[in-house]
Image (cartoon, rainbow, N blue to C red; front, side, top):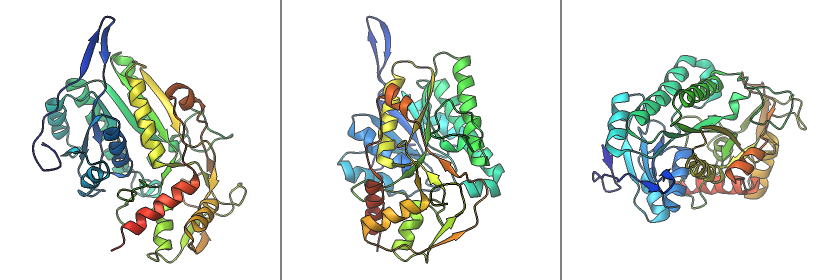
Length: 360
């Protein structure tokens, strides 16, 4: 069922226009699959702020039912949402059949590399089948337009940096392989049916939070990503930061990643939706800042900007991790007219503000 913020059932109108040149797609009504999650919630904010009609759909297995209310509080606008399990095709089809979305942003999926190494079958089952279900339902009942949240994990170890979209995909862990499999599936869907338009966005390392402090990264259980761990240590919820590997061939021996503010990432989704309106077929873009920062460099920036101390210990590398990975973002700059503008200092400041706002 589909509800607004007051738990009322709502119905949304479809939006296509006819011009002298023929059918012109107006992408307005957007299914945000996984919309209550970290990236999805920030996408919903940007979609609402820019005049789109997002429907935040989630089963809240790794997010909170409070998130849609917080999004509404940020903008003073109502957000429509639906509680949906995307592994259940019947639920996905009913929603798409009733609402006739113009496009979908697919953000559903497990995302921990160490967990994927320990439980690969769960990752293949969940990540791939949820995408299959969305594509099937969209193909039958909606506009054939999808933005897919892929990952830099599809690249694996590379001989040179920065990584462009032309680099070969060689994922080193089950999480990355699920993303690569889905990318291949989406390409084949576009080949089989020319009405399909797909944007594959290869995220690098999203961090930070909305500057309001109302939404941000809120992992279930013990976090595996760096920024939530820095937050926990800063507020003495965790004794120290464990740095996995201090002997990589990097300037300080710790792993190097391309960190991107989640608000820049959200804007990247809007740029992709805009591009979909021109019928590009299947396109692939890196979304990152285009520069690498080591784990220790991010830790040091966090301490400096926020005036806190982060004790740390260097331990053994984790299975599936690579030494360095940062993006060549020239294609996104040229084709999507998008680039990241927020700095590492913005990232650590907003992340800390979000964590402090959650204190009891």
